[in-house]
Amino acid sequence: MAISGTVGAEARRESLLATLSDEGQLLLADAVDRWDVHPMTIRRDFEYFESAGLARRVRGGIVSVSAGGFMERRSLNLVAKNKIAQKLLGLVPSGGTIGLDSSTTIYCLAPLLPENRGTTIVTNGMSVFDYLNEKPAIRSFLTGGEREQQNNSLVGQLAINSLENFNLDCCFISALSIHSETGTSETTLDQAAMKDAMVRASARTILALDASKLETRSRVRSLTLDRIDVLVTDLAPTDPRMDAYRDSVKTIL
Image (cartoon, rainbow, N blue to C red; front, side):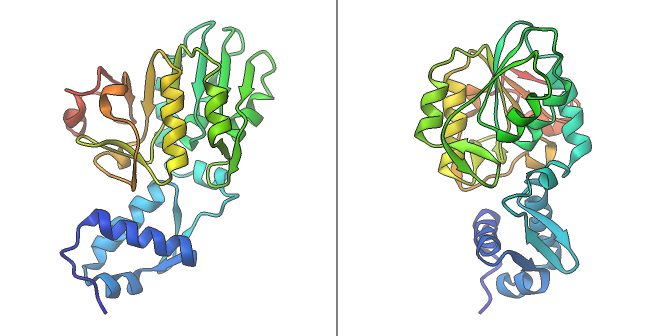
């Protein structure tokens, strides 16, 4: 039985994502039939899942990105992520202690970090921490915690407790979604809790995400916009798509 096309996009995407998680793939024809919507609507949903790093396109549909596919997801929207990383580099304080989350967007900053600034890194991202092993002049700490496969990260109360031991000058984080009314959101409570803990440990919060995530929502609410000091995207700061955030975020880059 087809589900009415009047159901909101958020509910449709949540259902599609649940199916993707359970079955590992989604076929365009099946999704169109189930939701009784135009194929272009489902294609936009598929593009959203791909841009969020949750799936990759195949002929006739999408497949779930595997738990071990961090580097595969890192290649999605790579031009945008590298552009964002260049902007972030100018915000890294010399001699400061900074937090880096486990996202593929923030991972792109790691190769750019200079070794002569006396920077200390605290991260729950195992991929970021592994990369920083190649830069011995940068002091780095990996939080404890339970391994979370999708982002190759550490989460849970032990990871949160680890962050509480630090006074971070700033943190660099990303989000699965951001909306001008509800703020950022994630797919899991664990990820939302880690973002919250890193922000609480930081004097300044820098949120970085590509434009495909603007005005989208995921299932778990995370940060309200008033907790974000700098919003960095691949767009020009004057781009009209950023207008919805100007009254809530202190700085847009």
